[in-house]
Length: 143
Picture 1 (spheres, rainbow, N blue to C red):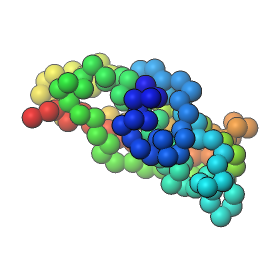
Picture 2: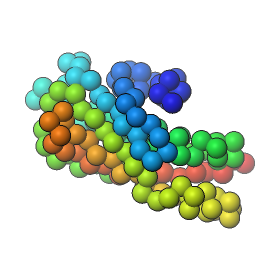
Picture 3: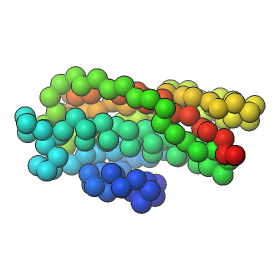
Picture 4: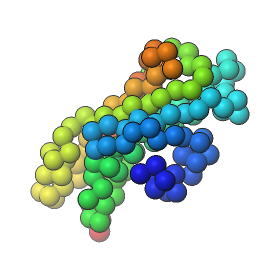
């Protein structure tokens, strides 16, 4: 999954994101500590943390709904992020689906364009939560 997402999304390659775990229930990505992506405080830039979290949400969406890609395109609809604590060093984003995948697929089967949230927690190496994000996704039917 990591190679596929890195090939499809250039920002994943640009930030050197690492795929720690990707299942239909959970995706964990890591942003290594890289000085070229630091902010004025020496930690990861807010934009890099946003990209890390959004990429983790995309990884779980592609894994959970991969069988639907022939008939629908997953698209991020909106996102909200809260920066909680200063992040220094590498950070990890953990994404989880906010609704059961089967429920989302049932809506797609019924002819609608389902929306569903993905919750992401961004943590420092010491376990402190440095950010929380929600990305609302949709499966847009093809044609």
